[in-house]
Image (cartoon, rainbow, N blue to C red; front, top):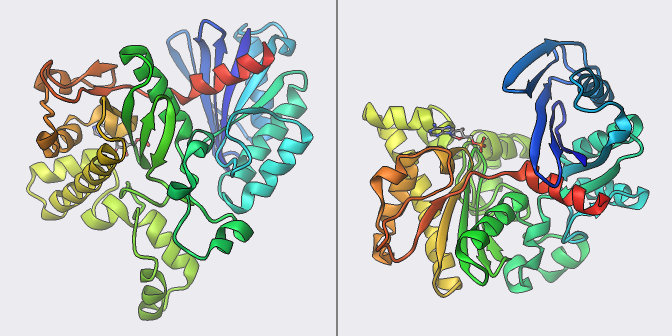
Length: 391
Ligand code: AMP
């Protein structure tokens, strides 16, 4: 069965088509600058990468261009062959603890949840509608970033604020990157067996950690929004909320400007004053740049803080897993984290830790807790859920 995995952003659309259940990637690509001048798309097929510059005035144009390419490259003979489409949807609120087939009612709910994810859900809805128009016969499935975290106990998901903030306004911890954490949890189950306690570290430009027991998420570091938990490329992570009105008063900035600072100008970028990208930070550290050294120190300490918290919370841990851009590629960051955890009996396998982007154990045989790199694959998770419904 041919299944599409789709991730629609406000001006972009990423896709991957699979032959299921083999999970074979047939074609993948990304449409960029949709609705902006100089729009283009890139496609990967048969080991080749193709770039085309075309006008894409909206997402429907992108979907039409995509379907034409699918036919031209003979990935499908007709659009009827696309039996299922899985859509990444950022926010499912507390309505969805699993993926669902997108009915009119579900689409309305996703639209209503836009107040919780104003930058993401509207774009996801545009993507869903565009595919519905162009490929109406495919089963459309929503796969939520928040769903995996719906198993948190209320003692973990509630903030210690007036209860009506939750009951009236849905203020609670939702958590994000759920599809990635779930993928890591399932991979670790297949490596170590069921019933294990795992700490998953999704460390990319955004970053979050989860505490998982027997495949169930018990806590996660992101919160009501993705700007909670560890510091990230440009996001502050946890701060004292009272800083916001204080800085507004002192700087004369309005709320939007301060929130923009917290989301786009903080984190590793804010502290280093140089870049949000860990490659630049690592270069800066080599050159003795004090701000880069400090940014890396803070980054690692916050992560280690969450691992320590989850270690106690889970009453021990059977494995720690690293994924995403930094988690998969930065041996230095993994090493800095694991060295800070030596007290737990973690022993690094230097050679294995110098590996990049492949699934591998990076601690020695006698390490009390094994650590792994597991390259994440949210696209295949989305395709699997879509396939399961269509089947
Ligand atoms: P993601 O959001 O998962 O795509 O991760 C993006 C981030 O991964 C970049 O901003 C970099 O900080 C980091 N990254 C990617 N490649 C490398 C690498 N080779 N070494 C260190 N960090 C990397």
